[in-house]
Amino acid sequence: MTRQMHLALFVTADGIHQGGWRHPQASDADQGFGFYRRLAAQAEAAKLDMLFVADKLAVDDLYGNHFATTVRYRASRGTEPLTLLSALAVTTERIGLGGTISTSYTEPYHVARMFASIDHLSGGRAAWNAVTSVSDAEAHNFGRTEHYDHATRYDRAAEYLNVVRRLWDTWEEDAIAPDKAAGTYGDLTKVHYADHAGKWFDVKGPLSLPRPPQGHPVLIQAGASGAFQDLATRNAEVVFAVYPDIDRAKAGYRSFKDDVAAAGRSPDAVKILPGMVPIIADSDDAAADLLGELDALVEPLAGLSFMSGSMNYDLADHALDEPVPDIRDLIRGSKGRFHYVIGKAIEEGWTFADLGRWYGSSLSFAKMVGSPRTVADEMERWLVEEACDGFVVMPAFMPAGVDRMLRDVVPLLQSRGVFRHDYAASTLRGHLGLDRPANSFHV
Image 1 (spheres, helix red, strand yellow):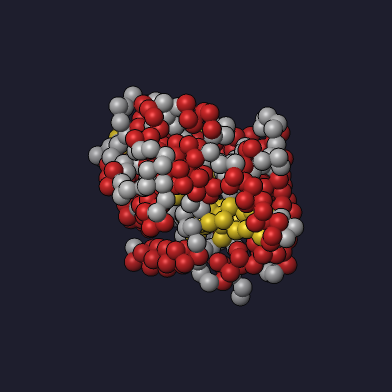
Image 2: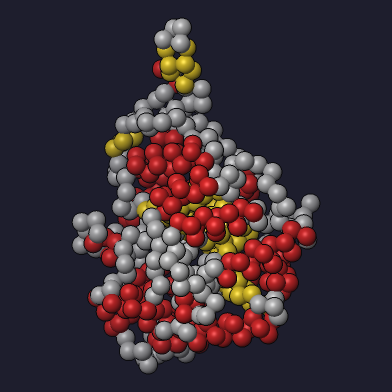
């Protein structure tokens, strides 16, 4: 049987290419709810697995110790994920709804309750991207002078995930059984205290609403470090990966699936979806020209301020014309991803200006450049050669960047039998082929 590709759409107001907002094809319109509603309708009509809304809990202000560079050069408008997903749950029927919430600056009970609510309201389509946050800028918004160190935030996240899943299980499936004649509403034997007392959290429970339709909303994780890999192999059901090329993707895919199996889980229990930036035009030459136009619009400081916030290291300490030295040991934020990025800069002999332009072009995700057929060919190649289970489609600019993907590339994938023509399930777990988790209170 032909392997089936999974596709998530990265929901963004301006696209992820740091020159994309300046391109003539990019919209200047205010991206209100109508924009997101139309985008969700397009993605659902194309039968994508899910919409995904990323988040960060601060405006990056590490570069030069101020937010000036971020505000001046980067398009960074967005909205709080769960607010947007709650609204889109009403306007959509089948597509999954995934959003980012940090384990570093929230409490498990809040997150368990909010995602359970969206799962109920959407009929079983919610997914949580559990991140650990990366920067001091975020810490400063939550009463901390600096962000948790790398080991601490993953230790906290591991306990956090256990608490949330335990809370989702505190109501058994048939705990609500109204009997009007007897005057009883719920079965006391089927509602439980979580009774969690750990290093980071003390949570009694139970949750204040029944178990979600999916049992647990789908758990997404994103990262590349060893600490991330250890946590994700034991917990994640979808991994949003950063692979800049197919060779790194194939190696990362094999390694991660092997680690999942070593953790006692089926490799099929985790879907690996690398981010992919499509640059699509009528011909391969036209697409290459389009990429050149976009890259020429990248202000190096846009890329460097983005990197500084994610690395939790101020790149403004270095001159733009300075060759990039080995600063990997100074990274306090996202480690695995930027160990590769800095290593590549050293290998290529780049200056910091070169690095800013390169990172601003793709954020180190793979770019697939060409005609619709060429892009479809490359996506199919990654799937067939086991470099991925699908992709997170990350448009370079909006709305044209996503229009061509959904209108011209997805139908080609459907015609080749590697992507669905229609939904066969009503839940996100169903779309992804993931099992419904057993309730941990069943012994």
